[in-house]
Image (cartoon, rainbow, N blue to C red):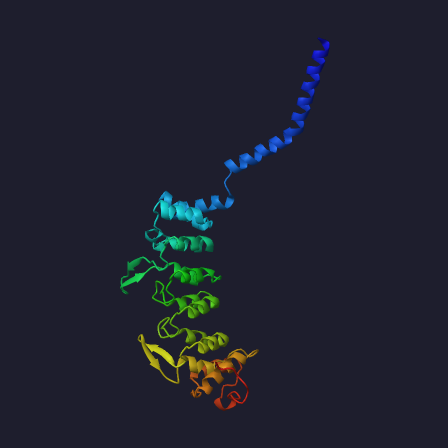
Length: 314
């Protein structure tokens, strides 16, 4: 009897010893499981909060979260299986921004791509009636993409049929929108390379090449000239006017430029001269500007570039 009790006691002791050794692992496993089941991802939680503020309908909120976190499977399910149509859902202070702009706003190109691959329209825009300018469109996803530092959003939209000649709510071309939003030059390049009208009136009276030239951006000016921008073109009351005394030509020859590196301005001057476009008289505004910055301001003291130097004018 005693031996049986002793054997049972030893067996119980071994079981308890093994259980105590396993206890920390079991406890940690329980905690991890609890975290997975109870505590949501901080990113997802933040996106749910943001979506709830922007959208009222629960399924729209779900699509916004999926797009903002790049969950392509959830985007497909919501759009294809549950019929959530982002083209008819709008948000923003004025209620006019299409839902497709949401993943751009939240910084997720994968979510943008997923929405487009499942049928979202890259060009959808909500119209509104102005008091004095007729019907205009609110900013759409193309406008949002054009003002981002990273051109990936614009590239994705263009890959899925986005219109490079989209206009913003002020009826300004996308080229100008990218320019005026702290000079998103990479986006300007993408738009030109993808077919935007390089000679369009981007804002009243101006083309994109004149915008860069009159601000002394001659590296950009040269790039645009090499890709077909017409330096003789201005606009008057939205009508094209061509002359050899245009804003672009005057800026290329007379703008003070960059005294530390005049090479791109000189390259633009050579580009014009090689095509028979002579230097026009100096406008008074540039005379005063040059004088203010300590540049020579008499025409006979400002030489033209040496055309004998080898220069790529393509």
